[in-house]
Image (tube, rainbow, N blue to C red; front, side, top):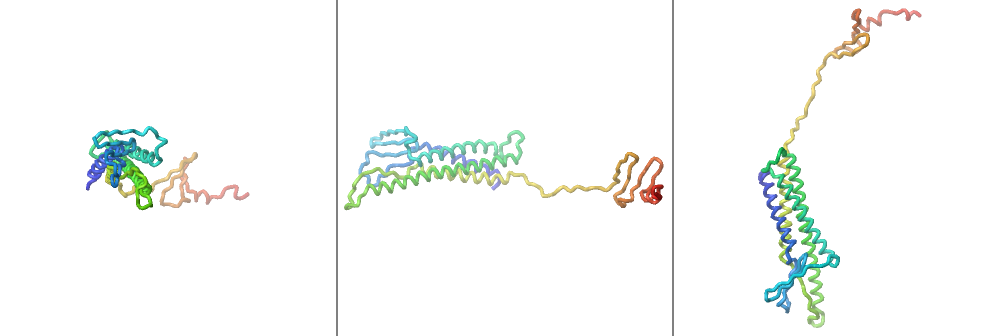
Length: 261
């Protein structure tokens, strides 16, 4: 598939996953009453992250929100936090990915900037999906633990008679919605990261080579200047004065009056 296809498909999957995470967080059926071996069938109870509900056989439903925060179990508060963090990250990623779409041109934004924005939104989508999956899994683990503890307390060891009647809860529909939504968000983020590679402009491997041409190097002197070529010996330079041109060898060959002192 092309880069645009990866980007658009990843964006749509992430958008659908974010909508599912929002729906799962607001649903009340995170845990539903287990009706197996339950003698009382006129009342059906189910609980969510924010409130608990009771539905009677007549069709009347009454929901009561949780009026406390500190009184709730720690794992329930952790699930709340994970779902909220996943929704916030997903919402920010949606805004970033809209501007990063290749089919949308805003101002003078080049492909390298779009590639960075696509990679950023993809990573945030992956983190959002992981948060949703972990939150739902933690709540499911809590349900499984409470279910088996309630089952152990419900049945005694004396002749297999029922000692106490306790309400057991099993998986609700919100858990499955949360798992699917988190998976869609995760897959969408991976596709966005793959699309980032196609948006990066290709870089050439050619290196610039500088050429230095040899020429006359001129060194200025208060009394004159020295002219030398790049091909001759550095010792054989000419000194050009106002009176004439003499080489250094000639200057050294004539003795001075100080040589006889």
